[in-house]
Amino acid sequence: MKETAKGRLILVRHGESEGNRVRRFTTSPEVPLTELGRSQALKAAGTIARLFRPQLIMTSHFARACQTADIISRQTSLAIEIDPELRERSFGSLAGHPYELAQQMAVASGDEPRFWKPPGGESLEEVRRRVMPVIERIALRFSAADVAIVSHGEVMMSLWGHLSGNFDTAPHPANGAIFVLEHRAGRFLPPQLLADGVAP
Image (cartoon, rainbow, N blue to C red; front, side, top):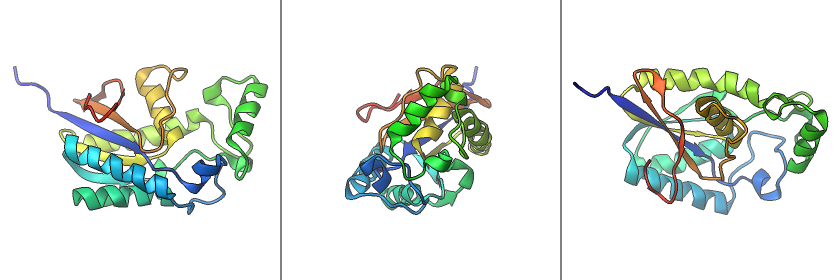
């Protein structure tokens, strides 16, 4: 029996941004990568070029993601497509505040973590509902190919939680980390974290 064709989505978290460096939620999507962030993006680009054969790079429109995608593109000679739905979770009125404040507010609310929403922002569940249709469309479009997708930590967490069936154990990826989502016949396998440059 012929094996069902498979595709892989190579999810990459952007390199370190200025916001990541100071551990504060950004106030603008135009916050750029740091020097370390560019190095992390270059390392991710090398890993992708070595282990995969992507046909396209898709990215969030935020500057830190676009800059990461551009670095990957220069290493792989691939075209880039932007999809604003891949943007990072909105933290609303917490923009400009330390990351720790969100954690404190979430715990104090008593809400299940995936449903807690910062004032004026999004919950992780809302991010999942926004991003999952995009991922499904990409998988349908490239049903038997690799595609690199540059996005953000909370986006990747929401996808991991949804596809693994467990939000509580969804890892928050480091800058430049890679998750691999294999799909066959329209169905996703559980996500895998690419560790030490070894393909899952």
